[in-house]
Amino acid sequence: MRLTILTPTYNWGGVLPQLYDSLKKQTCKDFEWVIVDDGSKDNTQEVVKA
Image (tube, rainbow, N blue to C red):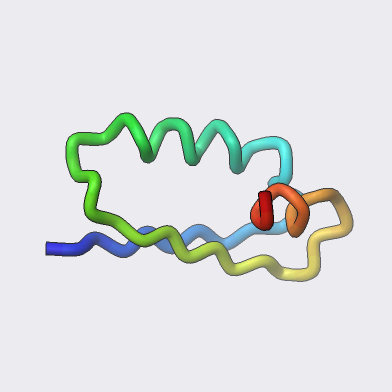
């Protein structure tokens, strides 16, 4: 069973790497991470692309 994780963001560029590290440590490895950005003015887009 695939799990979908939905994360709405606004200027969360600094938090997303920590969140991703936490997701990778979970027992369920079959997941997709959907990030919905609401026009962030920080580096959120660059962090997601990386």
